[in-house]
Length: 106
Image (cartoon, rainbow, N blue to C red; front, top):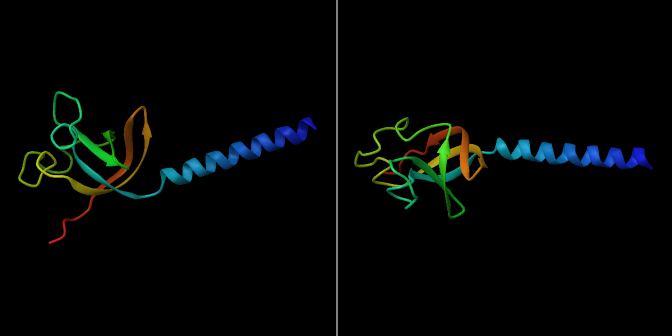
């Protein structure tokens, strides 16, 4: 009986880990912009943020200046852009492993 219980615990853990790993590699389209200027988040400077399901998160793994001039006419401080991302929410921040802006439609 003890072996069967141990087997089911290990099986459940493996399934949960496999599902978590699968979700981390899924590309999703999110809104990206300056957290302070466009999403109204608390902070002292302009920082990259994403909005997922209506909730905003500061981004770790890339920064606002890695994607053009944030203060340009079409920059993150002046507009909200779409981005393809892969990452996870950890400690109320979005930790990215992939971040690519979606080209604007004419």
